[in-house]
Amino acid sequence: MPESSTDTETDTETDTVLHVGGGSPYDVVVGHGLAGRLPDVLGTGVQRVAVVHPVGLAHLAGPVLGALASYDVLALPVPEGEAAKSATTAAACWEALGAAGFTRSDVVVTVGGGATTDLGGFVAATWLRGVRVVHVPTTLLAMVDAAVGGKTGINTAAGKNLVGSFHEPAGVLCDLDLLATLPRAELVAGLGEVVKCGFIADPEILRLVETTDPATLDAGSPVLRELVERAIRVKVDVVVADLRETGGADGHPGREVLNYGHTLAHAIERAEDYRVRHGEAVAIGCVFVAELAARAGSLDPALVERHRSAFGRVGLPTSYDGADYATLEAAMRVDKKARGSQLRFVVLDDLARPRVLAGPDEAHLRAAYDAVRGAR
Image (cartoon, rainbow, N blue to C red; front, side, top):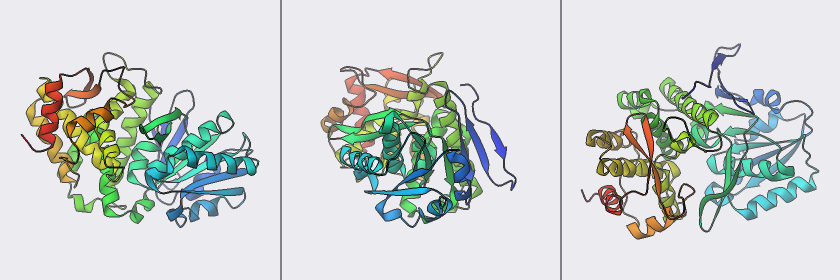
């Protein structure tokens, strides 16, 4: 995987800037108190800024709105969580942009978690066939996942993120101070994507998780900051090499590797009507594909157990029995990664050695799910 992220320090020597190369380069900034950076990220010639934020997070949008005092600001409050990611909400945002005279030189700013980022990015991607968007993620999950990489989307009755587009942001501001506002369960859920990155690309993440008291991982934790930066680097390197998920070199899955554990995770989210947090579902999904790889003969059982211990150590679930296999299999078959009638899963042959397993044995799938249910 080519190196594509670079770190630089600001004048205050407190912010880390990770550069995302490629056809539409931008920076991801990690630090504290970053709202003041926003005008520079917006660029020149901007008159109107639409701020998309969940209705319950207007207080977190305050510093952003303050930094935008010299612009014509249009607030676009949206429902919280996955409920925001609907065609109805997107259409309401489009109508508001039209009424405000929003032009190609104007910018959308998202302030919220992964669902807000997905929706706001999709609205920006589709308004006038694409206007700039800047993400200010307020959750750990959004910082390490949704805000970086340019994937946008909304849900349908058939499944999660089935309608969407690729639309890279003009910049991302990961203000670690915002993590202090998160309920503990939300912070823990965000670690699901972080630990995943340890298995697929950066084992140092696993070492940090396994040697750090999870209770000390909070907004001011230098270890949590390192975990955030490492997870973002993993995603940046993957995305720059394969933005549109067309495949990697030398058998590497390319961007599809970021979906490690996600096929079952999305099926669980749908079965639970999105009452299970995404990071929680990802943890379960990663254990499932580890069990699947072991049954296919490619993964050492000891590494399967390491999945359980690493996710479990930070407080994430590693088992699930809320739906039967037939229900989840039906949901997995409409997943974006499926090809025709064939299921596809990213699996590991070893730490940081991912590949795609297409059309796995049905007996292996059922046995892996039985293991996740605790019937081992």
